[in-house]
Image 1 (cartoon, rainbow, N blue to C red):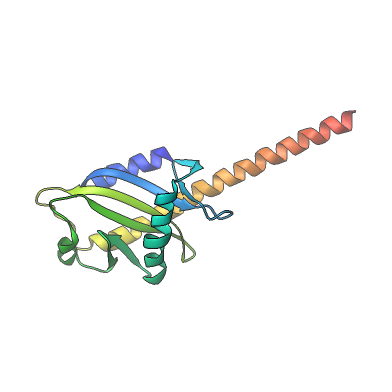
Image 2: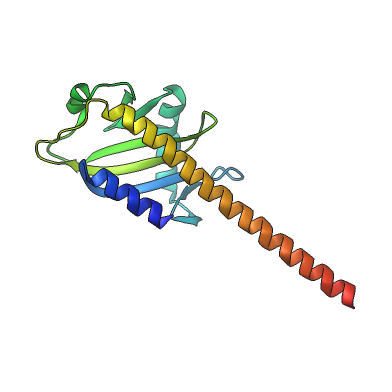
Length: 168
């Protein structure tokens, strides 16, 4: 997970002065919000409440959109229109939805300053949409691999217990 976050940080630093990059996912069994890099720990209550009350409802109600500085923006927006949503004098916040089968299961959060004379490709937002889908697959793949490893370890432990019982 930390390698993936590091690689994403490098990609986004090409466009922005990234201050923070976090991947959050919703645990399917409990509904708890987890930090992707520390998936054994729930995020603090205020962060979880913020995502459940302010971020995820916007994603659920606005398909194919992302959030930039509390504004809902469709992925089809042109770069010239996107510039007006940047804060040039303070920190910007970007939230990208992580989806699996059209269900939101997390978010990529990026906190950044805009670089001087920022030049974004014409279809930057559409590129974000493609990147978001790829990130979603990567995060989901990692989560499923972790669950599979837990199941394999459990199966091996049960098999060893059965051997011990059998030998007595």
